[in-house]
Length: 415
Ligand code: ADE
Image (cartoon, rainbow, N blue to C red; front, side):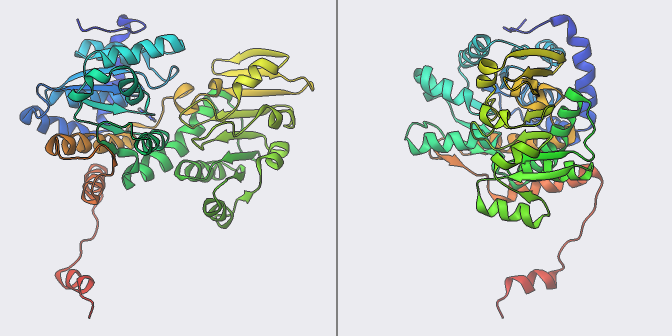
């Protein structure tokens, strides 16, 4: 049995059933698995992963296992692990370290456990495994061919490492694939954030003032979905270009100080810190609901709320009620951690198929170009994006047009 630290191995049967259904919705990955199981291009290599331990990540793990890799996986968030999936993966032969609701101490121990497997390729979701490797395992860095980063937050962090000259191996910003940004950040976050809020609260969205903080791809998708369910969407945004787009998309745009007073539901999707402060909460209506869908739990200042509120009560599985000093109550979903994974199951499998196809192609690219890439944050060439889109269209059974020879000639000619 592999080395592991999970909640309960007896849950493996339930986890395997979930993975089975996910696989049915991720044919692009199961097809790739068939190819990889012949080429075994990862034989002899260890993949260290810090990702949400979900049924979709399980399908990715199985794909890498089929390619001959040894795989060690830890959670990229203390609340996002699906314990049954973790158990099924241990039975599959993966070294899994993660439990839903693990403490910060356990979370850090699990990162270290993955690093101790001496990974050759790092798959990260948020940058924590990269930071662990760079800070605490310098002697193992020579073994690392490269890394892949799944999230906007992680890419921002990695670019800061590159700027500070501490990055020691190439990292592919899988997040920056056009297919990832569109399908995962826009459609995926749009749907799964609403899913998380509804599972946590079971409230009606129609007619509510729904404040979205951050109008990047995630915020755009979320705003559109909330509007589609009848909410009045208000956008708070620091970037003038994004704020202008929000305005032209038909949403009210205003500073958070103003929005705080009129919103019913608040969602942060910025990748930044203290977007909603305790002072903002004091001006909110009684009954306001707060959720975060950004990677880290710092976007809503839950720490200050925990210190300063008069009382805290768990009122549903993923919902805490806080009594403020002014006598009003606010409700926080999933402890301010990413609500789609803390209170729901993250993005649907079809969405993750696209993102994880990007991860697989990034790994192929790292292996093919071993030793030739700079220790920088790199984007995959555009042809990969087109290939991902083509494969996913095929999986959806959708045909589309091709240019005729005449048209190809026409667009290439300046005459
Ligand atoms: N990030 C968002 N949704 C996810 C999922 N279902 N699995 C893994 N990572 C995710």
